[in-house]
Amino acid sequence: MGSALIRTGLERCRSLGAPFVVVLGAPDYYRRFGFEPAYLRKIGNEYGARDEFMLLELAGGTLPEQGGIAQYCKAFSLVG
Image 1 (cartoon, rainbow, N blue to C red):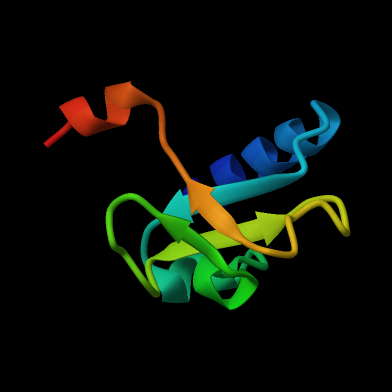
Image 2 (tube, one colour):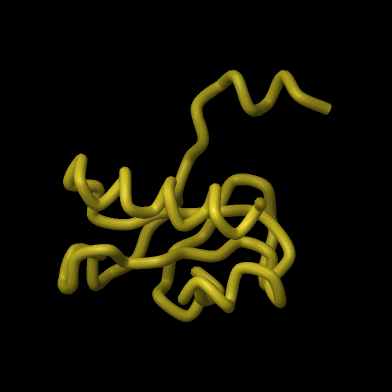
């Protein structure tokens, strides 16, 4: 069920024109969908996560070459 939800979500992101997707989760799980550690693409996060912060580029050439910091909306900081 989880895999089907992720695949459906990724297809929806593609259909909406999202250039890439980031997740904070289990690396072994998300690799099977093509995600890679975001630090390999010079993309950091505000939580200080390393291997668990992953991205999947949906459209080639859309990530900034100089890298950057992905920021979640403020609602995510309320969860804890």
